Amino acid sequence: MTEEAKESAVKLYESCVFDQLLGETLRPGGLKLTARLAEVAGISSNYVVLDIACGKGTTAFFLAREYGCHVIGIDLSDKMISTCRSRAKEEAVTGRVSFLLGDGENLPFRDSSFDVVISECSFSLLPNKEIAARDIGRVLKSGGKLVMTDIILKGEVSKELRSQISFACCLAGARRAEEYINLFERVGFQSPYMEDYSHELRKLTFQLAITFGSVDNFLGRLSGGPCQRKGAGDSAPSILSYQEFLRLGRPGYALVAMTKI
Ligand SMILES: C[S@@+](CC[C@H](N)C(=O)[O-])C[C@H]1O[C@@H](n2cnc3c(N)ncnc32)[C@H](O)[C@@H]1O
Image 1 (cartoon, protein in one colour):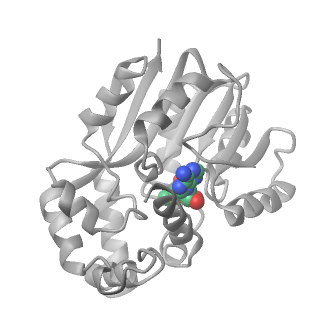
Image 2: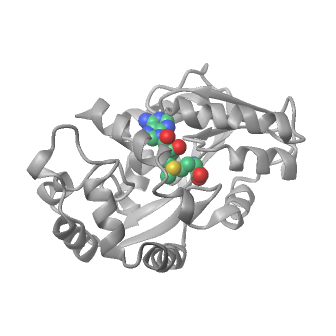
């Protein structure tokens, strides 16, 4: 299930489902929210920053250009990493950005390598969150910050309902903000800080309805499309399950920051 979930997450974001809607940043908030994330993280030119699940590299280029820091992006998608590497040739940030194919749950870096770790709309996609959180703690320097923006749930969903929708979209793996905070506290982080950006998710939902005709049309694309489970057949997640998940889970969007002790 775990490897299958990761594979379908990669497939979904490699597909064209979101391209039309999101463009270069594959999530709510765009670079305006990234600028706020950089401010909260206190990024400066002498920092080395890790971007987990960097997508097309837009954030890495933005941070290197605007703040002069060094950014390493990793992503599990070959296609994303080759896009990042070809873009790097055109961006005026040579030497300050690099990209690696890698899994957010198994970071290919030495202990205490980074001043800041960021993850935008991607932590929710990692099936083994405890393993991922510990690994983030391992690669961060003491006093370093993790700043993530992600889907949060404001309601409760049963395990059963969670399992009925595809893990590939950020929704299925999303948690309540306090669950993220408790998780990072358990693995050696402190000083939680949060800002609510649920209006950015509402804005995106509105754009989604316009682009696909309705939110249900979009959900239909998800349930029958690229993130359908392998061999799911008749048990492919139904629009009804997504609708129920949205009703009970009441998803929002938030920035969460924590400091490694
Ligand atoms: C919602 S997109 C966000 C991309 C980027 N952070 C952005 O803001 O545009 C999710 C990204 O997570 C990547 N991904 C999914 N599972 C992953 C994993 N286990 N490890 C690393 N990257 C992963 C996908 O390939 C995709 O690029």
